[in-house]
Each structure stands twice: as structure tokens, then as C-alpha cells.
Image (cartoon, rainbow, N blue to C red; front, top):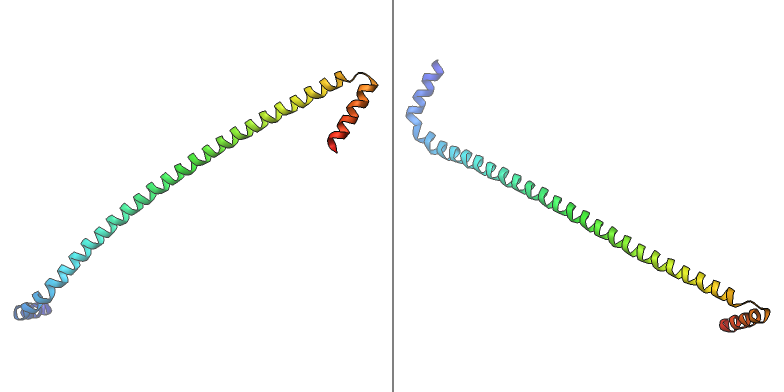
Length: 119
């Protein structure tokens, strides 16, 4: 208890120094706490914005992939339909030609005609 009475006596004599240095220290501590809270709020807000942007980017990526797949499917289907039509036309032409060539003379003429086309 002796140290308490000595401390009290010292504070009575030197209270001006305590106030002069203590107030700025207390104000500084309070300001640091306020800045820290503001910084944490901004960090939370930034994280929320980051999550929102990531979600939008993921949705955009999924939509673009879906549209690309649909486009590829449509083009592939169109190409397959065209190929099927071409194959059917070739088969029909071949059957028609086979039906038209019923004699040896017609076969010889068709062969000569084909050879002349390739030259």
C-alpha cells in the first residue's frame, strides 16, 4: 500500500504531464480502433463484392458454354442432315443409272463418257 500512496502523491504533483501525454495516447488508441473497424468493414464489403463478381462470372461462363454447345449441336445436326441428303441423292442417281444401262452398248457408252469426264 505504500506504493499506492507514493503514486498518488506523484500524480498530485505531476498531473499536468499525465494529462499532456495521456490525452494524445488515448485519442490515438480510439482513432486506431475506429480506423481498424472501418478497415474491417471495407474488407467485408470487398469480399462480398468479390463473391458477387465470381458468381456473375460463373453464371456467364455457364451461359456461354450452354450457348456454344447448342450452336455446335445445331451445326452438327445441319451438317449430318446435309450429308444424309447428299448420300441419298448419290444412291438415287446410281440406281437410276444402273436401271438406264440395260445393254452392253449403253454400258460401253457410259464408261467412255465417264473416262472423258476424268480427262
